[in-house]
Structure formats: structure tokens, C-alpha cells
Amino acid sequence: MIPPALKGHFNPMIKHITIILAFATSFGITQDLNAKTDDGKDVILHKNGTWEYAPKKIFDIPIDGSFTIGRNEAKVTIVEWTDFQ
Amino acid sequence: MDKIAKQYPNDVRIVIKNYPLRSHKQAFKAALYCLAADRQGMYYAMYKLIFDRYKELKTNEDLPVTFAKELGLDMEQFYRDVQDPALQKQINLEKEQLRSTGLRLSVPKFLVNGKEWDRKQSLDIIIENILSGK
Image (cartoon, rainbow over all chains, first blue to last red; front, side):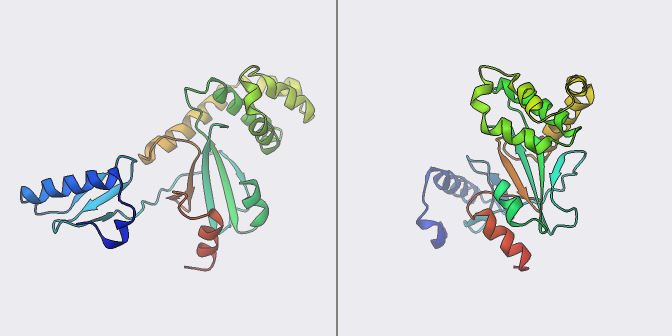
């Protein structure tokens, strides 16, 4: 079952999730499952046949000598990894 | 990022880490040049010059040496710093930090207060939401 909010965004990735859900429910899976989409997003497959994107993880990346701009006390910290592309 | 830094000078801190991809041969050296410039307080000036003229690095990976001269860096110290193994170690540490997240290893990659920015919303909106406590 695809949540109504996602119907307009049907794509091959969602098709894969639907197949996994069908597989899981067919074999009587009784717990929620964690899975990853083709594009690397975490999803939770519920035992009732629905799914949702997993809440975003929060990473605590130390500064560890990296270059910074702005105040240490700033409310927002943006960490950017770059290779000058 | 430049725009964000200017727009939110008090509320946003930007941390720049290197993840030079193996497929971009000039990227590792460019990162070294930036870190060497940082030892003379010129990281961001070097970063912007390299970023703006990255395509030229494909035919001249040592172009940042010219930038260093333009920026008025102490060249003797600059050459010495570029050779310092500590800078390579710093780059490897920064690469490992991204790997440790388990996120897809593509760059540029952004975390905003620890959460991956998936670009579905503009950075401005995300920042405004955080600042307004939403």
C-alpha cells in the first residue's frame, strides 16, 4: 500500500519498496523491517504493509582541526565535505 | 556557502572538510594547498580561488602555487607546509569522518546541525526554521 501522499511520486524506487513489502507480508514477517532505497535513503517497512522514510539520523562530527567560518556559538552548524567540483 | 556565511554571520557556522574523490586526481593536492594556506590564515581565499578555477587544475595541478603568490603568502613556509605529513593526515581524517556516517560517499555532502541536507528544501528555509525554533 502506498501512502496517498506518495502517490504522485511513484517511481522505480517505490516499486522496489512495494515488492519488498509484498514479500515480507507474504512470508508473515511480524516485525518492522529497516531497508535502504536504491538512492541510499533509509525506510521502515511496517508489518501492516505500509512504509515510511526513517527519521533522519543526527551525526556528531567533531571539528577536529577543520577550517571553519563563523562563530562557535552559532545556532546552526553546516558541515560540508568538498572535492572542489 | 559564501552567500550563507554573509547572510548569517552570527547564526551559522560553516565547517569545510575535504573528501577528494579518487577519480579527481587534482582534488587531493588542491586540498593540501588549502590546508597549507590555512597555516597562514588564507584557507578561504585559496579555497575560493581553487573552486572558481578548478577546471584549470586539470592541466596544471600546481596552479594553487600561483594563487599562493598572488595572496602574498610566505612561499618558503607554504612549500614546507604542503610537504607536512600532518596535512595529509588531516585530509584522511576528514574523509574517514564522512565514511563513518554510513552516508552515500558523494560530494559535496552537507550536514545541517548533524542531519544530512537532502536539498528538498533550500538551506535558507532550513536555517530559518532552526532559528525560529520550528
